[in-house]
Length: 125
Image 1 (cartoon, helix red, strand yellow):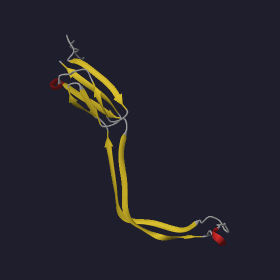
Image 2 (cartoon, rainbow, N blue to C red):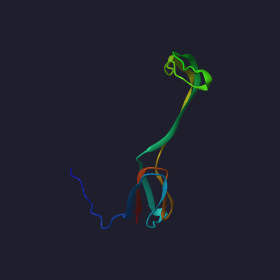
Image 3 (spheres, rainbow, N blue to C red):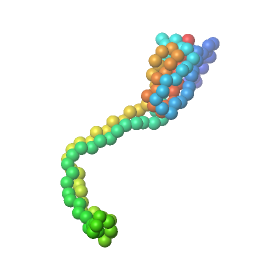
Image 4 (tube, rainbow, N blue to C red):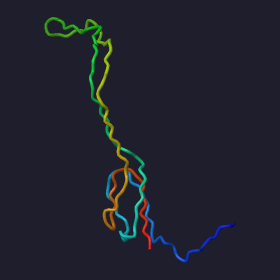
């Protein structure tokens, strides 16, 4: 069995507007009928924060010192301090927040972007 191709006499798509932005911003587009429009966006970047909490323990000790001279003059009799020993981190939690970027159709002529992304506004008949 073959397939049937039914030619359409007209396209259901009235307009397509595409673009990209590098950061959070507002974008002016040609007016669309909001009730006959959908928006697709593709994040091209992400942003977020990471934090960690817990207990730090251990000891670091200097292996050499700076010694002050007499009469208020400073003279170096050793080398700058270097530290030996270990520090460790235990317990606690991590907190990672990452946000994908996109756009929202704010009104018939404006998109609002949350960050770097590509977008496509499709209006149909």
